[in-house]
Amino acid sequence: MKAVIVGCGRVGAGLADELDRAGWQVLIIDLVTHAFDRLPAAFGGTALRGDGTDEDTLRRAGADGADLFLALTEGDNRNIMAAQLAVEVLHAGKTVAKINDPVRAEAYAHLGIATMCRTNLMTTAVLGFLGQAVPERPGIYLPQQPRTHVAGASGAAGAAAIPAATEA
Amino acid sequence: MFVLVVGGGKVGYYLTKELISSGHEVALMEKSSGRAEQIRDEIGSVVIAQDGCEGKYLHEAGANRADIVAAVTGDDEDNLVICQMAKHHFDVRRTIARVNNPKNEALFRHLGVDEIISPTRMILGSIEQDIPVHELLHLAALGVGELEIIEAHLQPGSPAIGKVAMDLRMPKGCSLFGVIRGGTPTPLRGDTVLAEGDKVIAIGRPDCEVELREQLIGEPAEV
Image (cartoon, rainbow over all chains, first blue to last red):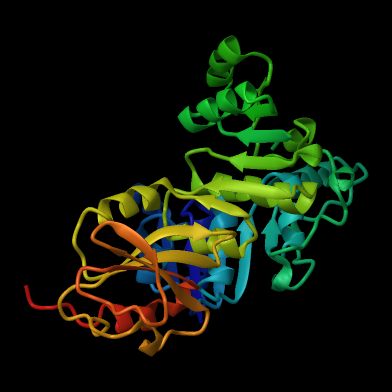
C-alpha cells in the first residue's frame, strides 16, 4: 500500500513514521529539507524536497495511484489544491486535506474531499476537558457527495448557510 | 456590474483602477494590511484589508451579489480556492483565475473555474511565434477553453503541401478555416491547394492535435 504525505511537520512526520512501521510504502514531501529532521533515523520511506501542489513533482515522486494521500502543510489552500490534484489527476484513493478554517473545511467536504479541521478538533478537546457543552463541529468532515461535483455544482445552501468562521 | 477582485498586487491594483474608471462597481480584497492601506490611500475605500480565501470575509465583501470574481493573487492555490468558494458557495456566475503554472490550467478548468488567464502561457505563446518550429502554435483559447485556435506553418516535409484542402483527413471536432499566404489571409476553401510556407489556421478541441500535427506538420524535415 502506497501513502503520500505532503508536509513534514509534526503530524506529517509522525504519521509517516507510524505508517512506515505498519508496512506502508511511504513518500513524504516538503518544501524544505530540514523538515525531514523530524523523521526518525530508522524511517524506511522516501523523503523528497519539492512542491506538493506541483503535478510534475508529484508524478516524478511516483504519487500516481497512491492508496492514501494526506495534505498536511501549514497552508489551507496548498492542502486543498494538493488534495484535488491527487483526486482528480493522480487518481489517489483515500485523500484527506487539513484545513484549519472551519468554513473551508466544511465547504470542501461538500465538494467531495475528506477534510480535517484542527480548529474544530482543538475547540472540541478543550471544551470537553472543561466539561462544557461541545458544539457539533466534526474534526473530520467526510465527503458529502461523489466527486462528480465539480462543474456546475451550485452552492445550494447559499451564502446565508455558511457558518461564521472562527479564528484558528 | 459588480466585480470582486482578490489580490492587491500589481495586477489587482491596475485591474481595479481600470474597472473604476470604466464605471463598474468594484471591491478589492488584499490580505496584507500594509499593502491594502497603500492602495486605499490612492484609489479610495473600495479596498478591503481581508483574506479573500476565507468564506467569512468573502461574504462580508459581498461575494454573494458579485457578477464576477477575479482571483489575481500571485499564488495558484489561493486563486483556485477563491474561485471555488465564489462559484460553489456564493453562486457567482463568472470566475476568473490567474494561473502561473501552465500545468494547472487543466485542473482549474476541470474544477469549475470559468476563465483562466496564464501569463506564463501567453508569454510562451508570444515567444513561440517568433521561432520557426515544426510544431503547432496555440494562438488562443475559445470560450471556456474547450476549443483552441491553432496555427500550422507548412514547412518542407509537410504531407499537406500540394494537396487540396478537401483531401485532408481532419479529425472530428476540428476544422480548418483559413490560410495565410505571403502575409495575406484568405478563407480556406475545399479546392484550395496548400503550398509550402502557408500558415493554416484551425479551430479544434485540444485532443485533435495529434492527428492535426500528422496531417499538417508530419515529420520535421532535416535542416
